[in-house]
Length: 90
Image 1 (cartoon, rainbow, N blue to C red):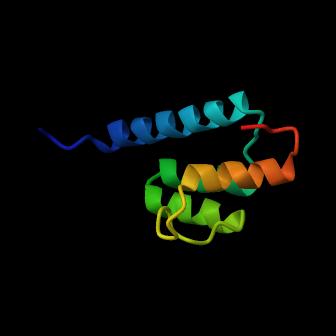
Image 2: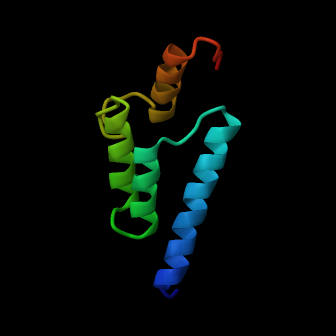
């Protein structure tokens, strides 16, 4: 299998970011300016997915790399969102 072209990789990354943003909006969340800028860096290939996640986790005080602290990253983030918005029940 051939490696994707730079244009194909950029499109794949853009689609992944758009899907993630849409998922967040469906949960009532929004992307702040700094996270949006990081997403552009990811789409443009200046950072990889791990760096994007590390920056986002650090921005919201989730400093341990995903899974390293033994907690599920999704459940940890959801718990933090519940603390910020007590109306969240899941």
